[in-house]
Image (cartoon, rainbow, N blue to C red; front, side, top):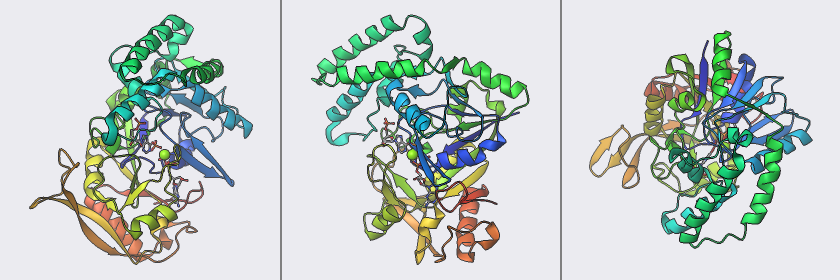
Length: 420
Ligand code: GDP
Ligand code: IMO
Ligand code: MG
C-alpha cells in the first residue's frame, strides 16, 4: 500500500486544499510533510469556507486521521487560533489530529528574525509570509532547533538557549524586541493548546498504516517553483516542496510512494518577490486577479498573475515524477477570447524549452495562442459537457507535459470537481 502525494507545480496556491478534501475519502489518513503556517489552503463546501494553515485538509471528511509530519514547522500560537476557529464551527480535532514529535517549533523569536532578515535585504527582500519559516528551518539544519517532542522532555532549557541565541542575532541586526512579550504570551498559551493533542512518532504511525494495507495521502504546501533546491532560488521557501520532501518529511521510503498528483492553475500566480516570466502587468493580469480573487489566503497580498508557463510546469513534472495532473480554476478563463500558454523561453538570441539555471533575468516567454471557449464552465458536472476549445487547450497541455489531466476543477466548491 502506498503514500500518494499531492503537490503544487507552480508558485503555490494552486488549490491543493480543495482537492485534498475531495480525495480524502479514498485514504486512511492525510498528512502534511513540509512547510508550516506560511500555507493557506482554502476549502469550500455546504456554503462554508475554511482556510487551513497547519492542519491537513483531510480534517473535514468523517473521522479520518490527519497527521502533521516531522518535516513540518509548527507555531503553537497560530495553531491555537486555527484550531479554535475550527472548534467554533463545530469541528473538534483532538481525537483525530496527531502531531509528529520530530516536527520543529517556530518560536516567537523566529518570527522576529524573519522580519529582521527581510528588512536587512532591502529591495532584494523575498517577500516572505513573515511566519518565521526560514529561521526555523535554518535552526533545524544547523542543529539548534526545538522540537515538539522536547515539550515532553527538557523544553525550558532548549527554549531559553534558543531565545538567548536569537536575541544576540537580533541585536546585531538592531532589530527591536518590543513585540516579543506579546508574541511570547500568545505562544505559551498556544503551547497549552498544543499539549491537548496526541504527539506521535509519525514515521512509525504512517509505516504501520501502510503495513496494514492502508493508503495515505500526503498534502504538499507551497509549490515546486518555491522548492529550496529546484525553485527560483533565492526567492523560495525553506523546505523541499517536491515529492522527495514527502519521503523525508514523513519517513516513508521512495518505493512506498504511489501516485504523484501534480496540481496547477489554468493560468499562473505568484505572491512575494522573485522571477515570474509570464507575469502580466496589463489589463489581462488585472482581470485574472479580479476574476480569480487572487489575493493571498494568509497575508491578503494581491497575487501577481500571468499566463500558464509550460516550461516551468514540465520541469516540475520532471522533478516530481508526476503521474496525474489536476487542473484548477479553468472557469476563470471562461470569458477570454483567446488564451495563451508559454511554450519556450527566449534568452538573448537563444530559445529553450528547458528550465535554465536562473530565470531571474532576461527571460522572455514565447507563447502559443488558443481560441477561448467563451462558455461558463462552473456548473458543468462531467467532461462530456466540456467545450471543444477547452478540450483542445487541455489536450495541448497533456501532450506538452506528457502526463494526463485526471481532474478538472471549475469552481471553489467541493462539488465543482470533475473526474476525467
Ligand atoms: P492552496 O494553497 O493550493 O490550497 O490554494 P489557495 O486556497 O491558497 O488558493 C486557491 C483559491 O482558489 C482558493 O480561494 C480556492 O477557494 C479557489 N479555488 C480552488 N479551485 C477553484 C476553481 O476551480 N475555480 C475557482 N474559481 N476557484 C477555485
Ligand atoms: P500554499 O501552501 C504561495 C511564498 C512567499 C514568499 C516565499 C517565501 O498556500 O500554496 P516563506 O514565508 O515561506 O519564507 O516565504 O514563499 N510562499 C507562498 N506563496 N503559497 C504558499 O503556500 C506560500 N508559502 C510561502 O510569498 O515569496
Ligand atoms: Mg494557499
